[in-house]
Image 1 (cartoon, rainbow, N blue to C red):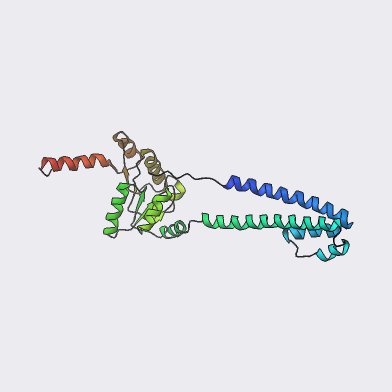
Image 2: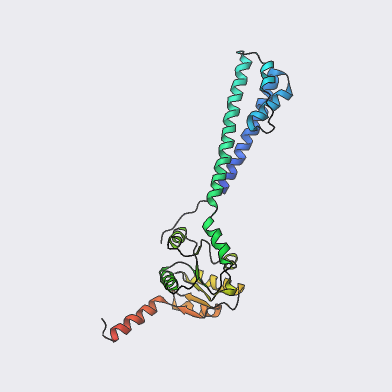
Length: 258
């Protein structure tokens, strides 16, 4: 199984926003003060700085400023320098806003949202929680017999694989009650917890029973010692793949098929 590291960029983004806001505020105060010393007009100085940084009011005070500053004097070059830095800060702000919008759009999982909308309307279906090798074989059988089903898988690579196979997929964590509430358990024929983790499967059983106590539950068990616990939690059937495989092999050997 491939482990995918998820980096939370929200804290980095928040720090960058604060730093950028502080830099812009400090520069606005400094540039306003400098321009006011040059022009002697606080209104022109402050409006020019605000307009240059943010274009917030749509008022251009460059004409009034140029009338108060003689061309090619030391004050003129100071104003030019302030204007250049204002422009660079504006570029940083606009670039960050655009990057944030692109990042927000990229975070929207359209396929999951569409699957959520359609899952509310499902009935007489099965919910496969965790796309393991066992789940893959079950999904193939369900598809062959045209039985509706839905897969819930939190691993992004497995979720993408399920989507490519044409199965309905929710890229979510089935151990969360809020996720199972969106798959119409009250109209489902059954829910199957098929991961290789008895702990995750147990959490799923408990969550499903809490949402809809009458839903039939089938669980894969890795350890035979957990079968009793899973039954007590609400599973009607526990499957240990190794035991089933062993029985099949033993049957074949006994019949002389090997």
